[in-house]
Image (cartoon, rainbow, N blue to C red; front, side, top):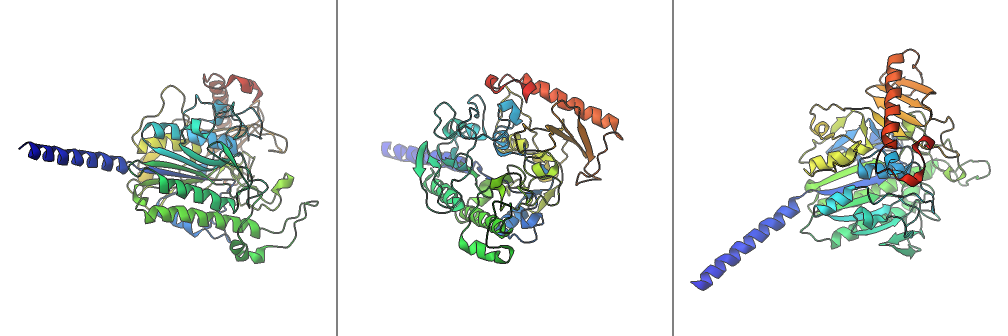
Length: 470
């Protein structure tokens, strides 16, 4: 009798443990793929005439494709910080890209996606580009582990000397030295290695901020051959004449191929149905309108939008974005609603039914109703602030806001303004502020309110200077 009871208890215990493990596995995994400097028009499914992107095209057909999606900044570091926290980047003290050695970093008081996911039992992995501090060896700055990543491999800002055999990767705080291969392959190999070795009873978060298509690009020969007819032989650095767009197109297709490896891994391991996949870019592209010597040979496409990286015009901030999660997102959905990169934070945790911090301002909105074609009303305009550095936006615009079809850009003093109706004028050709004074004043007032809100944000670092010196 005693043995029978023990057997029953053993079976019961096994059943409970099996249910608990099964419940853990059923939590959705999250894969966040962030591309560097990818333009709105750089993908085949967004209209590129030459670059082939079959894997991302397929992803778009399996989920929702956003046609009015905006990065939080026209530059990388602010955008990355904002998407990971749901807060406009000036609240975080990250106002521009962060050069190596600069005393700017994502403060530990901020709460990232990975912090929350880790606290909810997720394994968190990073493979790619960090660029949220002054260096991966900087002991006084927070590092990826402080943002919640259990295992990580990353470089600071861009591959040195270029994307082939980079020398500046770190893994878990230790320099790797020269790493043979192409950056995209190195990053994806490491990511898939993390997934292979993970605890399969727990959900995972994979943050994959790839280095493509930021300069200086390099791609395997088989991709270069695909676009040989678009390539000339020599690069002229003196006269800023490049060797044609072929190498850039090759890097796009190489990037797509590596993303395909990740998506196929999810399929092969029966993870695709239970994984939320997010894909987007940190800012608009470097087009053939080069401003700096290291931009030579980059030929990104804005899809015809005005401006480029480091501009507040559409070309600098409107980027491709796709989400896939079969249980909650209808395949083939196209969303035309204006969406901002800081919306990912509240939206993801709404989908996961996890609370977000209530002790700070979260600028993003939960757009999950859009994923099932339900009504959605945003309670405030989209907002951007952009700290100018030498060689950035030559026109000097500092702020932008979008409310419905209206978009305004202003200088630091919110005096010099341009107003556009994007429904009637998607390429921002016709400035209409004088013809629409009420709209202009409403949006100017909103920008001033946001400036004040940022200035008064209790978490804003005190050592980044007064907001009056934005």
